[in-house]
Length: 61
Image (cartoon, rainbow, N blue to C red):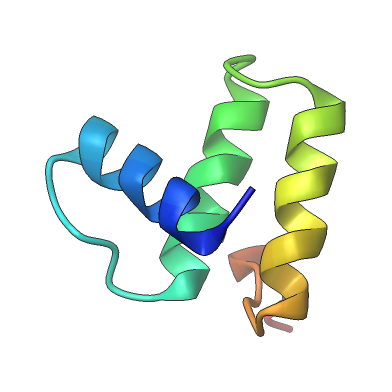
């Protein structure tokens, strides 16, 4: 998995570039919630993006 793969997935589905790394994380959270990806894939994406500096919309408090 690379950031380029995640961006490509986002752009393919959304038909636009992500505004930020946080938008990519939110995109994958929605995919998990809707059942499009499983917990294993979501966790891998979450941890990868979090290490890159992404912050989930759910982490703002």
